[in-house]
Image (cartoon, rainbow over all chains, first blue to last red; front, side, top):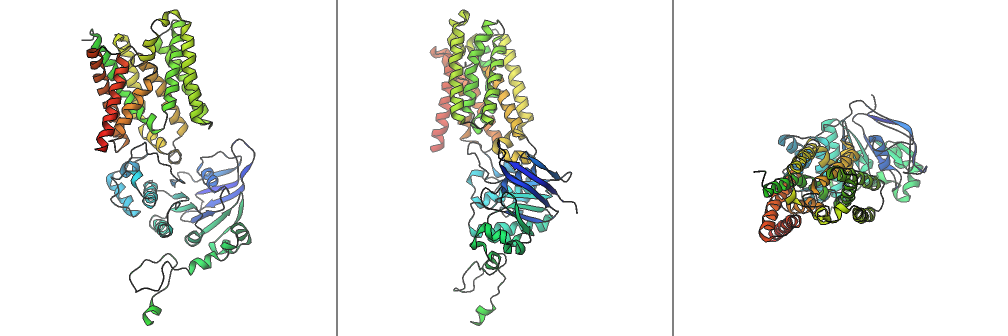
Length: 261
Length: 260
């Protein structure tokens, strides 16, 4: 299948210098794929995204986007000016006007129905991320691009957000390109992980990357066995009665042992 | 009816108010207050040059305001310490303009009319120019509204939608330069920024969407023109400052009502 976006030997310099932020990056994302870019601060993750989207000049190399590609973009840390009054409903109609029904559908899909009349500045971090996602989905994108979408969310919020992303992919068939540092969660919800530190250190399936020596070197001993750790991690303790509770993704236990005990 | 100087003054003020409301909203949203100041203060230099070369005051102020807007845009885009640069430019422009105007004997006598406006002396030609310019700027703002609002809210979101924020910034800068040239007769170089910012700030209190804020600002600016001119006639106060005082009263009232 033709990749949605592909880069060859992409190199970006720090503005006004010849310091490379990124060197010789080959990257591609195919339809319906979830690809996550991980890397330490300053490793060029956001620069890669912006270059792939064409927001940033390349020093050398090439980026090819499939013709007619529709992208839904959720940028990093959207700084909202309190100076500009904006309801959620109005925001969803920027820059392309949508009908009330379309707007409410998008809000329902991202789990924040009925927020239309709220001011953007009155939303919690989690609600705001979902509204941003709803707006991105209104473009009926082939590709969703999310730059650190879970910044400022707490752990349950992060888990819920990634579940939502997987659900959106299932429903719409859109590919997803994410930048993240939530290693634990990322590892599970991605088809492919690209580990970046000025260049591509390693890439492949989450299993492959988490055991790669380059990845361990980058994220230190703490990252070792991240995947295994995650897969066995419960999002609740067992010392309480069996009340209904939500399992995090990958939490596949049942309560049979509990019933016997 | 147009024979009456007061009617002409009201019409000139309303023409300006109509465009100052929406444009002023962008100035507030994008924190361009100092930008507006620099461009407006440079207008004095434009007046000096217009008088020296015997061209229209509008042409002179427009040319200098456009040059200033482009200069400020270029500097801001390059990411200098913005408030410092703008502070330097704003006050330097005013000082240089005042020095320049002192070389033009014709202008020395009525310097204050360029600083604070002379709306009661507005003639038919002024009216035509003000309304044509206002309609032009308003049309541009309305046609590009979605793009302008998106890039004012967040430039990254705008770029992702294929909007070039630099183009939108330039459009607003040029619109500002045109409005400065229109406003020099009405409220004068020193109070143009006030006409842009004060009504928009008052409208901000109640507005829930950008459109309502822009419309509210235009209404408040229009009301300020009428109230200010009426007070100026009754109390024999200077017209331009009276209009801005009226706008300030609306602002204070909007704040007080919000608290209540």
